Image 1 (cartoon, rainbow, N blue to C red):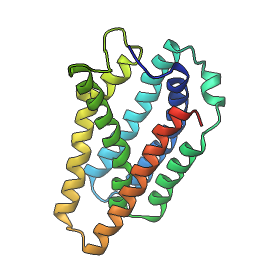
Image 2: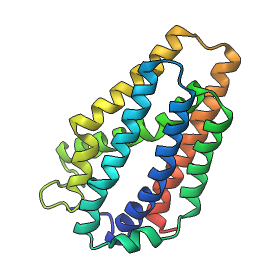
Image 3: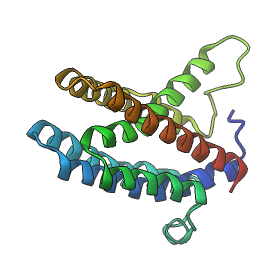
Image 4: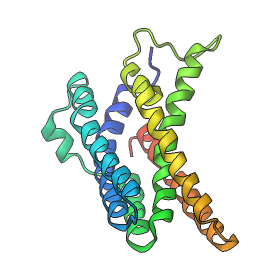
Length: 198
């Protein structure tokens, strides 16, 4: 069974819905900043994937958890959602495509890691996670599944290609690290927000 209280997951889904608007717009900025057809295609594909996620996965969650479209749209953004989304857009508006990719990677890789971690925990002996009858099984399967893990792999490969083509200076690497640390902190704050219902 799932050990997360229902109200925390419902709050998380509502906030994730708001956050994904920022995430898609940040990829729109990446699309505009991209200088190759490969990057343009990747950014456009990610925007389509986000829109598909909202129109399919979120709709299923909302139906399963009795969240109406009106309730989803009218739910206020939490401060954690606004802070994270605004930071992504700020990096997108003021940074270059490489910095924005680093910022966006925190979410992409974070969800992938959490999905795999929960799945691994379920397979461990004396685990706190049971998949059978778990109300969060679809979420676990979505983020530990092949499609999402392929997106994570692609995201890592794109970042690696950029670094190989244009190795960052010590200063540039420090800037990447600063963006990464800020985004992972905001990502953690987003997860904490769901648990504390703030």
